[in-house]
Length: 166
Image (tube, rainbow, N blue to C red; front, side):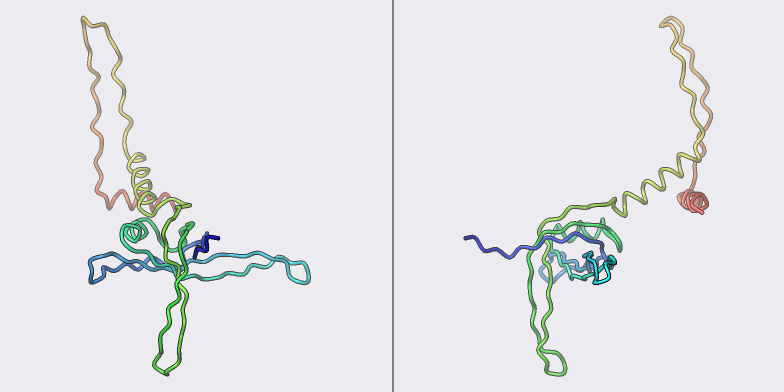
């Protein structure tokens, strides 16, 4: 029989990832992950129980999490459970559980993609449509005059997006 430490969690980030570079030069990130369990109480009413998990990742995985995740992002993580023991300032032995991420699946769009899409949408809304030149015979080619496309400062684009959203 193959015995293995294996955990699979699907939930939403409770905090933005906190990323640091370790003394070894390796990147590490940590965040909390909320998972929900649904059940019926004695009266038959649906209840939700939320469990919070501490998730850690190292190396390239940590860099990906830092770049693409934010508080509320849905994600599915596969990893292993680790338990840390330490003695606190009151000489009490404490234990904490951590999930060390090994594999993942992003379940929603990334922070970067959402920001880029928002800026592109605003830029497209501000642009004037350019007419397409008609095809003519090879003997005589005519070119259509194209109007100048207005250029906008990135701050103007973001302001226009915020106005559209409100």
